[in-house]
Image (tube, rainbow, N blue to C red; front, side, top):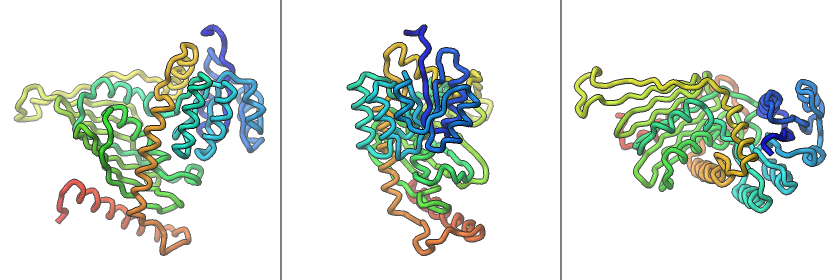
Length: 354
């Protein structure tokens, strides 16, 4: 089967679907058969660009395929993914795996019953900086992650920032620590949408590791970084401009910076999406479980949904101001929200800001 070109399709021709179609079109081991979108012209433009057929109904595309990329809005993942799996089509479902745990369970159970590969699109796992970092993580004690990005109206119509962005970091934490989460505190703020746009979470794992995670989709600049503190080293990771710095003690007692060595592991300059799809294809050819599987994707979704529920206790959204804020008001609200998040975080870690 490895010599046979897999017939692929892409359902959902938005931003992420466009990236998938472009990547698949360049891969010699697959044939991009068609793309599908409820907006016919959007699908047609993408089909012309990559010499394939445009479809309006995914039910017309699925019978032509061996494998499919499901890049539709989150609330449709369950419907479209299940339809593909029931037809025996290997399915790559963008994160999160589904909108609810019930839908996630239906997808994973159907994939097992139909014996098809179900991979969840947690792209950050395939970032060269992340894959290299995994090699150096040994019993982390404290982890901080920041994922900040500017406002994008196309991404804010159906889910909050935890399920939209922070779920990447939740997935990474669950992979690195590999221990149950025993407790967490979370606070979120809705400023420009009907969902939380800024969130801060502190997670406590069974082995004692603590992780502080911040996600924002209303920042003026992009930032994606992680810091890992462990007995043997301190690791600083830049996701955006893939780079890792590893600080290690040269001797048990550190008296000056000269007693600390800094290593810069060499990273392979490869596109994460290409690596991710190559992994999916390899799992199809070799009938093996993907990384992450539907079950692992469900773990991340479950924790993300629990965090979202917890944040409702600290909802600072526009309850007293149902109209969308203007620029001046939005800056004022952002300042208040940031202060509340800071106060909560300091309280959680036992620091008196006075």
